[in-house]
Length: 84
Image 1 (cartoon, rainbow, N blue to C red):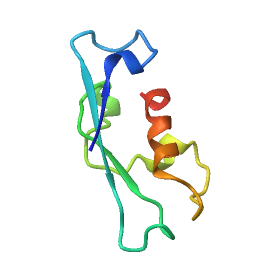
Image 2 (cartoon, helix red, strand yellow):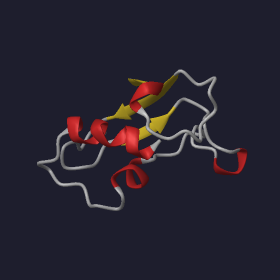
Image 3 (cartoon, helix red, strand yellow):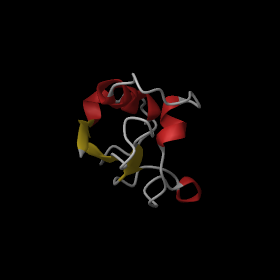
């Protein structure tokens, strides 16, 4: 689990009552040859764009870049504040 404090997120468009954002990074059996999955556990989007519905957000977070074996999980976590 990765928890981010609100201060890590630069946007002012989010509900002020949200103090933390929680993401779960799952490593599949084929990791590091297969990309990890990223799930969101915080409801912070409009109901038409629900991000905590159990879908894998990996491609949205990395912006469509292909996963490479040399990628580090730390780099993926660093992208989370910009994604939010």
